[in-house]
Amino acid sequence: MIIQKNGLTYFQFSHIAETTRVRHGVFTRKGGQSQGPYQSLNICETIGDLPAHVMKNRRAICRCLDADSLVCVQQVHGSGIKIVKQNAAPGVGDALITNQPDVFLTIQVADCQPVLLVDPIRRVIANVHSGWRGSIQNIIGKTVQTMTEKFSCHPPDILAGIGPSLGPCCAEFIHYRNELPRSFWQYKDADNHFNFWAISHHQLLESGILERHIQISGLCTRCRPDLFFSYRKAKVTGRFASVIGMASY
Image 1: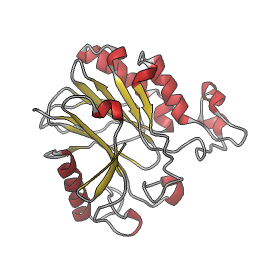
Image 2: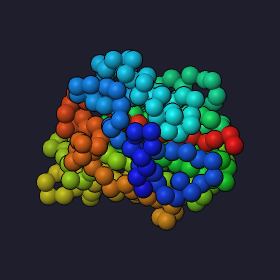
Image 3: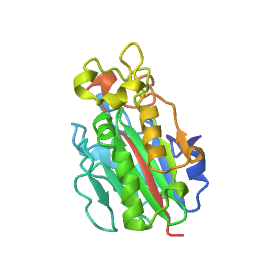
Image 4: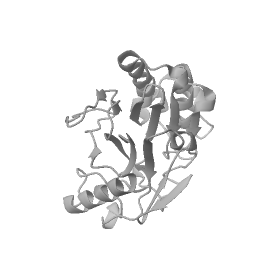
């Protein structure tokens, strides 16, 4: 579902939107302050954009979700998972988990998959950055496992949403034999394009999440540069935001 608020446009997963006190959004690139290749709602401060523009963009997102600030990490395309507490610097990682209210977990992407996870029973949320390297390391499955071990989450209770990212139409891997494990090759078409949405879907099911609790946006970032930043499309480009948090009221 598409939401337009305060001049910004963002997408929500219907089953997560129905969860009490959980606020989330996968924001498009529209409505921000950045210029040039970062136009306009870039939230990444380490890729050459003006810091003042990035801060204004982040504040605009906060206003949409009624958040005080966004919790970001240094993403490294690994499988590091950070448990975030209030007022704690999360550091380096590619997945964030919290059970704290008013902590808005943020992933920055431009083709990689943002994957949102919510346990409405235990009141635990997670935000995952799953690029192809993260997929190989099954960062999605490791995040679900961490939610189970650290917060006693029950996987069949967890809701999952796979956000806009590089689709099977554009995820070409010419050197896939050297880059991707053989188990991924079943997701390849005749033109060496891989369906990473299906791979993530499978990893979620393998983690114990129910089919009916998984939603896939089905939006390819490379095909929609009008809506999203795409590294495959532009190389020098911004990063859009996937955000999730729990309100304290």
